[in-house]
Image 1 (cartoon, helix red, strand yellow):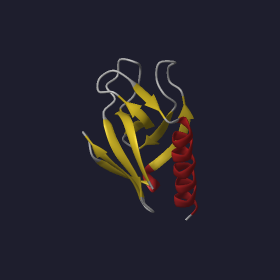
Image 2: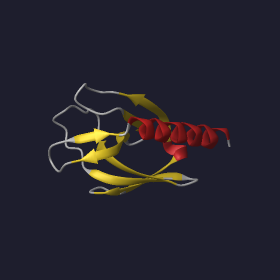
Image 3: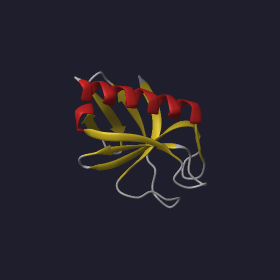
Image 4: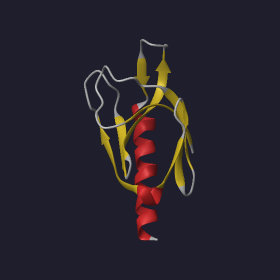
Length: 109
C-alpha cells in the first residue's frame, strides 16, 4: 500500500513543527518512508502504533513508536505549500489499521 503523507520524526509535535511531504509504502516486512528524510522501519522494531490528534491545528495522525524514537504520519488530502495542510482522516485511519495488523503479525511470528 502507498500513501502520500506529511510526517515528523522526533519526540514532540506541535503546530510550529515542520511537516515535510513524502510517501509511505507499507511492504510485507517494513514501513518505507521517502521524502526529505528517507528511512525503512521493520515491523519487528516497532513497539506500538497510536492514532491521535496532537493539537487542534494539526490533522489526525498516526504515531509509530520505534526503537529510535517516534514517527508521526498523516495522510494528505490537500496541501498548499507552506500554508495549508488538510489531512485525509479516513485514509489515516486505514494506514493505522494496516500498521497495527502488520505489527501484530510481526510480533506473533
